[in-house]
Length: 314
Image 1 (cartoon, rainbow, N blue to C red):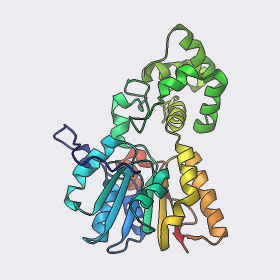
Image 2 (tube, rainbow, N blue to C red):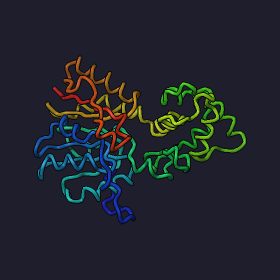
Image 3 (cartoon, helix red, strand yellow):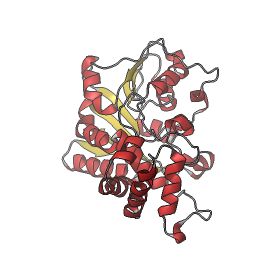
Image 4 (cartoon, rainbow, N blue to C red):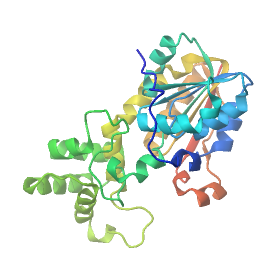
C-alpha cells in the first residue's frame, strides 16, 4: 500500500521556505510538458512544490496532480505551498520508482504527464543536520528519506577500502578515489568519522598538493559527497527501475520530462530515451538536453548543471 502523507503534519516554523523556493527550468518544464486543461499529472519528486504549483496553475480547476516524495518534511512544506489547490492534490510519501504501485492503489491506469526533478532540494542541502553540505558542518547522514536505515556514517565507517573506492569512482567519477578511500580507512582507525567537516578535511588531505583549493569553482570533496549521497539513497537504482516502466503509465501523447544534475543520471536517461524512440515507443521531443539560461543560472547557481530531456508516448 502507498503511504498517503499525514494531512495533520505541519512544520513548526512561521515562514515556509517552500514559498521562496524557485524550481529549476520552470518555464522549460511547462513548455515541454505541453499541459492539458483538466489533465492528470505526476510530480514524482515533489520537493517544496514549485513545479507542482506551476503545473496546477496550468491545468486549471479540473486538473489533478499526484505528488510523491521520499522526504515527509518536504511533503509538509509542499502542502502548505499548495494549500489553495485543496482537492486537486494527492500527496504520497513514497519513492518515484514505486509509481506503478502508487497508481495501482489509486486505481489510475494512465496520466497525461510525469515530471522528475532529480536534484536535491535546497532546504535539504541548507540544513546542516541532514549532512548533505560540505560547507556547513553536520552529522554524516545524507538520507533523503529520514526514515531510511542506512546513512553516510554507516558506509564510511563500515565498508572496506575497496568498496569505498568503488563508490567514489562509480558514483562520483572521482579520479582520486583510491587515495581518498585509503585516507578514510586510515582515519577511522583512531575514531569513527562522524561529521561532514571531518570527511571533507580527510578528502583534502588525500588530494595531491596541486589539486587542493585555490579559488576553484567546486570544493575538492564535492564528488565524494555526491557519490555517498547517491549510494545512501540508491538514486541510480531508483532511476533505472523507473525508466523501465515510467512511459507505460502515460496516455498516448503524454509526456515524460526528467531533469538531471550530473552525467551519470543524464547518461541513463539519454540512452533509455533513445532506445525507446528506436523501438517506436516514444518520440524525442528534445534531441539534445535543454540547459538553464544565463539569466537563471545567475540567480540560482544550482541550476548550472541542470539539464532537461523529454519524450512523448506514441
